[in-house]
Amino acid sequence: MELEWERMWTKVWNVAGREQDIPNVGDYFTTELGPESFLIVREAEDKVRAFYNVCPHRGNQIRNPGMGHAESFQCAYHFFEFNLDGSKKFVPDEDTFTQGVPQETALVEVPCDTWAGWVWFNMNPDAEPLEEFLGVLPEHIDPYHFEKMYIVQDKTIEWDTNWKASVDAFNEVYHVQGIHPQLLESLDDIHVQIDLYDRHNRYLVPFGLLSPRYPNKDEITDALQGMLVRAGIDPDEFDGAPEEVRTMMQTAARESTEARGIDVSELNDDQMTDDYHYYIFPSITLNTHHTGVMVFRQRPHATDPNKMYFDLQNYTRIPDGADPPPRPAHTTYKHGEISIGLVLDQDSYNLPRVQKGMNSRAYKGLLINYRERRIRHMHKTIDDYIYGPDR
Image (cartoon, rainbow, N blue to C red):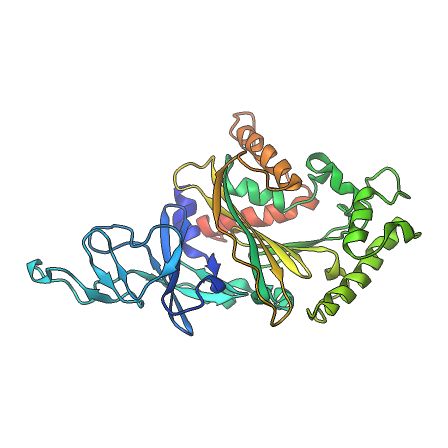
């Protein structure tokens, strides 16, 4: 856990939050990762900065968790005050510091950048540029225009499992037949395209189809009927075969989305229905759809490797010029306190059992098949950070 933190987490780009949450100069929010807290602030109209949320005087946190607005940052402990760029503004009774207070006494800044409407930070002062870290992902994801999407759900749940077990679960669909059998009625869990990149990866899951595992190949299942309804198609008037549902959904989704004033001309037909599922190393999962994205941020617990924080956020795209939906409050829960939907409830029920099993002396380590190769890719990338690629 310590090696993972020092050699990997402190060397990668991490998502802090949304630019939309800090539209004005002086707007700020905090974010936590492992044992650290960070303060994100819009210092100028075109400049966002990120700092450790720590006063350099005696270590007090500058701001409590949350978001707000400030003209400057005053530490509540001794009233040290800092400008929005982190520089020293005022020190009470400064003449009593016989050694003097160095002018460079300031909030400790970390590299910060923006992409896709998110603010990103990196604890490594010599970090590679965010664009270089992301590699091919902007080319793939920019056509969805995440920057035009607004958050409509924002929850954090403490799960009783390691963060890597969570990433592993979402990086394969091999478990659908066991944990999510109801999904066999509406997606193809066999013919899934998998692509591995430098650090990141993706798979493309076809929706609007029966799984080859589903026993009745001619059935228009309740799940497929529900998809037709959501696409604006009356199931009672649909007389096609199950394999035709997806094509009809794609046509209907494109037409209805364009009619709402949302331009999806940059997306192909498969993107009208399918889950283009991206994993941004080390902790971000994007379930990407034509007018929305479900985001998982999987954060390590500060002290317990058997726990993690699962950040669940849903975003929706609105027509240009339309009023954005109200920003939901961020709420936090312990494992099992709330439902987060059937599929994720099934995962969250299973993962603590995975964690207990992995802690058994009988467990010898991951046994990976070809459909689980995203997992192998992720663990190799972690090992490359910890031990070096030439170990």
